Amino acid sequence: MMRGRRINADKNEMGDRNGEDDKNGKGGIDEQTIKEMTDGLEDEFHEYLDQGARAFCDMIEMTPDTTPEDLQTAIDGWDFKTMKLTVVRFRDFNEPALFKEGGHSGTRAFLRDTTPEGIVYRLPFGQWWIPDRAKTFAELDDGVPMLYAGFAVDGDTILPKLQSDDNFFIYGGFNHEELVQEQALTDDPDLASTEVYGIWDEVTGWVMPVTDNSVVVWRAYGEGRSNYLNVYWGDTWRRDHERYAMYYRNDPNDEPAVLRDIARYEAELKRIVTLGLDPRGGKAGR
Image (cartoon, rainbow, N blue to C red; front, side, top):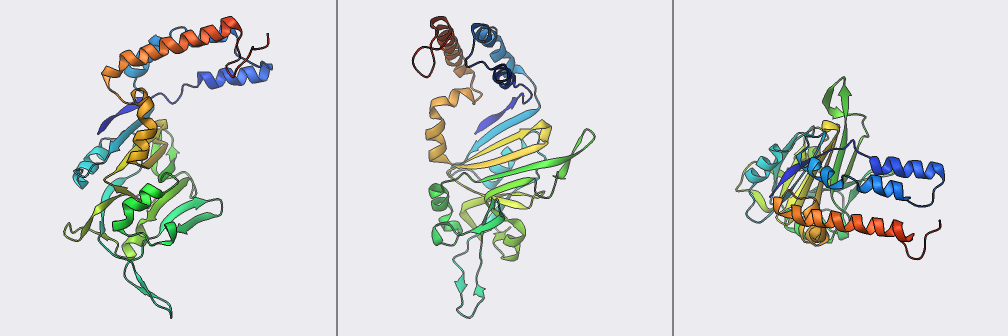
Protein backbone atom coordinates (compact mmCIF):
# COMPACT_ATOMS: atom_id res chain seq x y z
CA MET A 1 0.00 0.00 0.00
CA MET A 2 1.39 3.39 -0.94
CA ARG A 3 1.07 6.58 1.05
CA GLY A 4 -0.33 9.68 -0.59
CA ARG A 5 1.41 12.64 -2.12
CA ARG A 6 0.27 16.22 -2.04
CA ILE A 7 0.75 18.04 -5.32
CA ASN A 8 0.52 21.71 -6.23
CA ALA A 9 -2.35 21.98 -8.63
CA ASP A 10 -1.79 25.71 -9.23
CA LYS A 11 1.52 25.43 -11.08
CA ASN A 12 1.03 25.53 -14.84
CA GLU A 13 4.15 27.32 -15.97
CA MET A 14 4.72 25.09 -18.97
CA GLY A 15 1.18 25.63 -20.20
CA ASP A 16 1.54 29.41 -19.79
CA ARG A 17 4.75 29.44 -21.82
CA ASN A 18 3.31 27.30 -24.55
CA GLY A 19 0.32 29.60 -24.76
CA GLU A 20 2.61 32.62 -25.12
CA ASP A 21 4.60 30.88 -27.85
CA ASP A 22 1.41 30.16 -29.77
CA LYS A 23 0.28 33.76 -29.48
CA ASN A 24 3.65 35.04 -30.65
CA GLY A 25 3.69 32.69 -33.61
CA LYS A 26 6.88 30.84 -32.62
CA GLY A 27 7.29 27.41 -34.10
CA GLY A 28 9.75 26.04 -31.53
CA ILE A 29 11.35 26.61 -28.14
CA ASP A 30 14.16 29.16 -28.09
CA GLU A 31 17.32 28.96 -25.99
CA GLN A 32 16.10 31.48 -23.41
CA THR A 33 12.97 29.42 -22.80
CA ILE A 34 15.04 26.25 -22.40
CA LYS A 35 17.27 28.06 -19.92
CA GLU A 36 14.25 29.22 -17.92
CA MET A 37 12.87 25.68 -17.92
CA THR A 38 16.07 24.02 -16.73
CA ASP A 39 17.51 26.61 -14.32
CA GLY A 40 16.73 25.58 -10.78
CA LEU A 41 15.01 22.37 -11.87
CA GLU A 42 16.71 20.35 -9.16
CA ASP A 43 15.69 22.91 -6.52
CA GLU A 44 12.10 22.74 -7.76
CA PHE A 45 12.19 18.96 -7.47
CA HIS A 46 13.17 19.16 -3.80
CA GLU A 47 10.59 21.89 -3.18
CA TYR A 48 7.95 19.66 -4.77
CA LEU A 49 8.76 16.81 -2.39
CA ASP A 50 8.51 19.05 0.67
CA GLN A 51 5.58 21.28 -0.18
CA GLY A 52 2.13 21.35 1.32
CA ALA A 53 -0.45 21.81 -1.38
CA ARG A 54 -4.05 22.10 -2.46
CA ALA A 55 -4.27 18.62 -3.97
CA PHE A 56 -3.72 15.05 -2.87
CA CYS A 57 -3.25 11.69 -4.56
CA ASP A 58 -2.95 8.19 -3.17
CA MET A 59 -3.29 4.59 -4.27
CA ILE A 60 -4.21 1.25 -2.75
CA GLU A 61 -2.94 -1.99 -4.25
CA MET A 62 -5.43 -4.66 -3.30
CA THR A 63 -4.28 -8.21 -2.50
CA PRO A 64 -6.09 -11.42 -1.51
CA ASP A 65 -5.15 -10.54 2.10
CA THR A 66 -6.74 -7.06 2.03
CA THR A 67 -9.76 -7.01 4.34
CA PRO A 68 -12.70 -4.60 4.17
CA GLU A 69 -11.33 -3.02 7.34
CA ASP A 70 -7.91 -2.53 5.71
CA LEU A 71 -9.53 -0.85 2.72
CA GLN A 72 -11.67 1.42 4.90
CA THR A 73 -8.66 2.43 7.00
CA ALA A 74 -6.72 3.39 3.89
CA ILE A 75 -9.66 5.39 2.52
CA ASP A 76 -10.10 7.21 5.82
CA GLY A 77 -6.52 8.44 5.49
CA TRP A 78 -7.12 10.29 2.21
CA ASP A 79 -6.96 14.10 2.30
CA PHE A 80 -9.43 16.55 0.71
CA LYS A 81 -12.12 13.85 0.64
CA THR A 82 -15.44 15.57 -0.05
CA MET A 83 -16.94 12.28 -1.15
CA LYS A 84 -18.26 10.23 1.78
CA LEU A 85 -16.73 6.82 1.09
CA THR A 86 -17.71 3.60 2.83
CA VAL A 87 -16.67 0.02 2.06
CA VAL A 88 -19.70 -2.20 1.46
CA ARG A 89 -20.08 -5.94 0.86
CA PHE A 90 -21.88 -7.66 -2.01
CA ARG A 91 -24.09 -10.60 -1.18
CA ASP A 92 -22.88 -13.76 -2.93
CA PHE A 93 -25.72 -13.94 -5.46
CA ASN A 94 -26.10 -15.81 -8.75
CA GLU A 95 -27.67 -14.87 -12.08
CA PRO A 96 -31.33 -13.85 -11.96
CA ALA A 97 -33.97 -16.04 -13.55
CA LEU A 98 -35.97 -14.19 -16.21
CA PHE A 99 -39.51 -15.25 -17.11
CA LYS A 100 -40.88 -15.29 -20.65
CA GLU A 101 -44.05 -13.55 -19.51
CA GLY A 102 -41.98 -10.81 -17.89
CA GLY A 103 -40.46 -10.29 -14.48
CA HIS A 104 -37.61 -12.07 -12.81
CA SER A 105 -36.52 -13.80 -9.64
CA GLY A 106 -33.18 -13.26 -7.96
CA THR A 107 -30.85 -10.29 -7.85
CA ARG A 108 -29.92 -8.03 -10.78
CA ALA A 109 -26.93 -5.70 -10.65
CA PHE A 110 -26.52 -3.30 -13.56
CA LEU A 111 -23.23 -1.55 -14.27
CA ARG A 112 -23.82 2.04 -15.32
CA ASP A 113 -21.85 4.40 -17.59
CA THR A 114 -22.02 8.10 -18.38
CA THR A 115 -22.55 8.77 -22.11
CA PRO A 116 -23.44 11.90 -24.10
CA GLU A 117 -27.04 10.67 -23.99
CA GLY A 118 -27.01 10.26 -20.20
CA ILE A 119 -26.49 7.37 -17.79
CA VAL A 120 -26.95 3.98 -19.46
CA TYR A 121 -27.04 0.39 -18.29
CA ARG A 122 -24.38 -2.05 -19.46
CA LEU A 123 -24.29 -5.86 -19.60
CA PRO A 124 -20.61 -6.58 -20.28
CA PHE A 125 -20.08 -9.30 -22.87
CA GLY A 126 -23.82 -9.99 -22.85
CA GLN A 127 -23.64 -11.48 -19.35
CA TRP A 128 -25.05 -10.48 -16.01
CA TRP A 129 -22.60 -9.01 -13.50
CA ILE A 130 -22.40 -11.26 -10.46
CA PRO A 131 -19.72 -11.29 -7.74
CA ASP A 132 -18.11 -14.49 -9.06
CA ARG A 133 -17.51 -12.74 -12.42
CA ALA A 134 -16.26 -9.45 -10.99
CA LYS A 135 -12.58 -10.17 -11.66
CA THR A 136 -13.23 -11.48 -15.17
CA PHE A 137 -15.24 -8.38 -16.09
CA ALA A 138 -12.59 -6.09 -14.57
CA GLU A 139 -9.77 -7.80 -16.47
CA LEU A 140 -11.54 -7.71 -19.85
CA ASP A 141 -12.96 -4.19 -19.58
CA ASP A 142 -11.40 -1.87 -22.19
CA GLY A 143 -12.06 1.18 -20.01
CA VAL A 144 -11.03 2.17 -16.49
CA PRO A 145 -13.86 2.24 -13.94
CA MET A 146 -14.09 5.76 -12.60
CA LEU A 147 -16.17 8.06 -10.44
CA TYR A 148 -15.67 11.83 -10.66
CA ALA A 149 -17.59 14.56 -8.86
CA GLY A 150 -17.31 18.35 -8.64
CA PHE A 151 -18.67 19.92 -5.47
CA ALA A 152 -20.45 23.11 -4.49
CA VAL A 153 -18.62 25.87 -2.64
CA ASP A 154 -20.07 28.33 -0.13
CA GLY A 155 -17.50 31.04 0.51
CA ASP A 156 -14.41 29.16 1.66
CA THR A 157 -16.36 26.02 2.54
CA ILE A 158 -16.56 23.05 0.18
CA LEU A 159 -19.93 21.37 0.56
CA PRO A 160 -20.60 17.63 0.27
CA LYS A 161 -23.10 18.13 -2.54
CA LEU A 162 -22.68 18.31 -6.29
CA GLN A 163 -21.95 21.68 -7.87
CA SER A 164 -24.81 20.84 -10.24
CA ASP A 165 -26.98 17.76 -10.72
CA ASP A 166 -24.90 16.56 -13.67
CA ASN A 167 -21.43 17.47 -12.36
CA PHE A 168 -20.27 13.89 -12.02
CA PHE A 169 -19.05 11.05 -14.25
CA ILE A 170 -19.51 7.34 -13.69
CA TYR A 171 -18.05 4.44 -15.62
CA GLY A 172 -18.36 0.85 -14.46
CA GLY A 173 -20.22 1.59 -11.23
CA PHE A 174 -23.53 0.70 -9.59
CA ASN A 175 -26.38 2.84 -8.32
CA HIS A 176 -26.48 2.25 -4.56
CA GLU A 177 -30.25 2.62 -4.31
CA GLU A 178 -30.73 -0.05 -6.99
CA LEU A 179 -28.36 -2.42 -5.22
CA VAL A 180 -30.32 -2.00 -2.00
CA GLN A 181 -33.63 -2.60 -3.78
CA GLU A 182 -32.23 -5.74 -5.39
CA GLN A 183 -30.83 -6.95 -2.04
CA ALA A 184 -27.37 -7.12 -3.62
CA LEU A 185 -25.60 -5.83 -0.49
CA THR A 186 -25.24 -7.36 2.94
CA ASP A 187 -23.81 -6.58 6.37
CA ASP A 188 -23.50 -10.29 7.20
CA PRO A 189 -19.93 -11.57 6.56
CA ASP A 190 -21.29 -15.12 6.22
CA LEU A 191 -23.47 -14.06 3.27
CA ALA A 192 -20.92 -11.73 1.66
CA SER A 193 -18.88 -12.50 -1.43
CA THR A 194 -15.13 -12.81 -0.96
CA GLU A 195 -14.53 -12.02 -4.65
CA VAL A 196 -15.33 -8.31 -4.61
CA TYR A 197 -15.91 -5.34 -2.27
CA GLY A 198 -17.65 -2.08 -3.06
CA ILE A 199 -16.67 1.53 -2.35
CA TRP A 200 -19.87 3.55 -1.88
CA ASP A 201 -19.92 7.32 -2.18
CA GLU A 202 -22.90 8.55 -0.20
CA VAL A 203 -22.82 12.00 -1.85
CA THR A 204 -23.24 10.84 -5.45
CA GLY A 205 -24.92 7.52 -4.67
CA TRP A 206 -22.55 5.35 -6.70
CA VAL A 207 -20.71 2.15 -5.78
CA MET A 208 -17.40 1.12 -7.40
CA PRO A 209 -16.57 -2.63 -7.38
CA VAL A 210 -13.06 -3.51 -6.17
CA THR A 211 -11.42 -6.95 -6.48
CA ASP A 212 -8.29 -8.38 -4.89
CA ASN A 213 -6.37 -7.49 -8.08
CA SER A 214 -7.53 -3.87 -8.24
CA VAL A 215 -5.39 -0.77 -7.89
CA VAL A 216 -7.53 2.02 -6.44
CA VAL A 217 -6.26 5.51 -7.30
CA TRP A 218 -7.53 8.58 -5.45
CA ARG A 219 -7.09 12.18 -6.64
CA ALA A 220 -8.47 15.33 -5.05
CA TYR A 221 -8.00 18.87 -6.40
CA GLY A 222 -8.77 22.38 -5.16
CA GLU A 223 -8.73 21.21 -1.53
CA GLY A 224 -11.58 18.85 -2.38
CA ARG A 225 -13.54 20.84 -4.94
CA SER A 226 -13.23 17.82 -7.21
CA ASN A 227 -12.62 14.16 -6.37
CA TYR A 228 -11.65 11.29 -8.66
CA LEU A 229 -11.79 7.58 -7.85
CA ASN A 230 -10.31 5.18 -10.43
CA VAL A 231 -10.24 1.39 -10.15
CA TYR A 232 -7.61 -0.17 -12.43
CA TRP A 233 -7.06 -3.82 -13.23
CA GLY A 234 -3.88 -4.46 -11.25
CA ASP A 235 -1.87 -6.45 -13.83
CA THR A 236 -2.45 -3.82 -16.51
CA TRP A 237 -1.75 -0.92 -14.15
CA ARG A 238 1.53 -2.38 -12.92
CA ARG A 239 2.74 -3.14 -16.44
CA ASP A 240 1.87 0.34 -17.71
CA HIS A 241 3.41 2.16 -14.74
CA GLU A 242 6.49 0.07 -13.97
CA ARG A 243 8.76 2.15 -16.22
CA TYR A 244 7.85 5.43 -14.51
CA ALA A 245 7.00 4.23 -11.01
CA MET A 246 9.75 6.28 -9.38
CA TYR A 247 8.07 9.53 -10.46
CA TYR A 248 4.84 9.04 -8.53
CA ARG A 249 5.69 6.99 -5.46
CA ASN A 250 7.16 8.45 -2.29
CA ASP A 251 10.21 6.21 -1.90
CA PRO A 252 13.32 8.23 -0.85
CA ASN A 253 15.47 5.59 -2.56
CA ASP A 254 14.12 6.79 -5.91
CA GLU A 255 15.53 10.30 -5.51
CA PRO A 256 19.02 9.67 -6.96
CA ALA A 257 17.55 8.06 -10.08
CA VAL A 258 15.06 10.91 -10.53
CA LEU A 259 17.86 13.48 -10.22
CA ARG A 260 19.92 11.58 -12.81
CA ASP A 261 16.97 11.67 -15.17
CA ILE A 262 16.56 15.42 -14.60
CA ALA A 263 20.24 16.00 -15.46
CA ARG A 264 20.00 13.79 -18.54
CA TYR A 265 16.87 15.47 -19.89
CA GLU A 266 18.27 18.92 -19.13
CA ALA A 267 21.42 18.08 -21.13
CA GLU A 268 19.32 16.77 -24.00
CA LEU A 269 17.23 19.95 -24.11
CA LYS A 270 20.37 22.06 -24.21
CA ARG A 271 21.84 19.89 -26.97
CA ILE A 272 18.71 20.30 -29.06
CA VAL A 273 18.91 24.08 -28.73
CA THR A 274 22.65 24.30 -29.32
CA LEU A 275 22.54 22.22 -32.51
CA GLY A 276 19.28 23.72 -33.72
CA LEU A 277 17.64 20.31 -33.90
CA ASP A 278 13.99 19.54 -34.39
CA PRO A 279 13.10 16.98 -31.65
CA ARG A 280 10.90 15.21 -34.20
CA GLY A 281 13.90 14.66 -36.47
CA GLY A 282 15.93 16.83 -38.84
CA LYS A 283 17.10 20.43 -38.49
CA ALA A 284 14.95 23.07 -36.87
CA GLY A 285 14.38 26.32 -38.73
CA ARG A 286 16.19 29.38 -37.44
